[in-house]
Image (cartoon, rainbow, N blue to C red; front, side, top):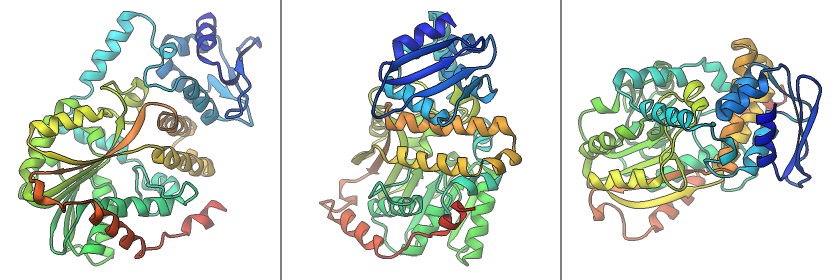
Length: 423
C-alpha cells in the first residue's frame, strides 16, 4: 500500500478520497470541495494496491473489473474516476505514470505498434468493438444508434435531440444538393446515411468493417424502402472505387492509427470529385501527439488512437487538401458519455445477463473514464471540412447557419426513451 499511498497523496488535493485497505486500515486524501463529494473505496485483497500502483491506467480498471477495488455507496466508479481526473486534468498526469523508464518505454513501443492496422487487423478490431450484441447498444444509445459525440445546443436537451442536432450540424457543413453521391466511411448503424438521403434525396454508400452494423443498416434501408438509393457494404475504405461529391467519416479516424493517416488522405483525395467536400468528425487530443492508454487499447478499442489536430492537418496538407473549417467540439462528448453511463446503469441487470458482471464493470469503467477525459482532461472532438478547390464552398459561412436552422424545423426527436427509462 505504501506506493499507492504515496501516489494518491501527491495526486488528490481537491475533493476527498477515503481508501480502506484489505486489512481495514483507512487512508484519507484531499480536502472538501464543492464539485466533488467524498468518495469511499475499498481494496479487497493484499495485492490490489500493488496491482494498481505498478501501472495505474491498467491496474485501476482491472482491479475494479475483478472486484479487487470496490466503491462504497452512495458513490460509484464514475465518482472516483471523475475525482481522479479532476485532480489530474491533462493527458499525462505525472502521478499516474507507470513507474520506471523500462515500463514507460515498453508502453510507448507497444502503443505505436498497436496502431499498425492492416486490412485483416482492422476488420478484427472493428468486430471486437462493434459486433457486440445488438441489444447492448439498444440499451444505452439513442434510437438511431449514434455511437459518437452528440451535439448539445442546450445542455438540458435529451440525448435523442442532441444526436438529431449532430446530424443537422454535419449536413449543414456538407452543402449537399439533390442527386449527389455521398460516401459515408465508418457508417455505423446507418443513421447519418439515412438522414442525408431523407433530407436531400442523395445516393449514399455506407461502408464499415463490422458485419452486424452492415446487416442492420441494410435492414433499416430496406424497411424504409430506400435500399435502391442508400446501400451499405462490408468494405475497407482502401478498396472503394469511383468518385463521390461528398465524403463523410464520423468516428472513423480514431480507428486508423497514425501510420495509416497518410493512406487515408491519399485515398479520400482520389475518391473526392474536384469540386467535392469531405467532412470528418473524430475524437481528438488538445496539445501535441500522444498515446492511447493501455487499458482502452486492451479492452475497448484495440488499434485505436485519438489524434492531435496537428497530425490531421499535416497529413491533409501533404495530400493537397485545403482545410476550410475546424471546430473544437468541447463539452459535448462529456454530456453524451454521462447520458450513456446513466442508461447503462439503468439496465445493469439486463447487461449483466447478456454478458456477465465483469463485462458490466468494464463497460462502466470505460464510459466513466471517457467522460472524465472529455470533461476534465485533454480530449475534445474535432470537426473538419476539407476541399480540393477553394471555390467548392460559398464565400461565407452563412450557408451553414441557414441550412442548420432549416433542418432544425424539419424533425422532432423521438421520445421513446422516456418510457423505457421508467422500466
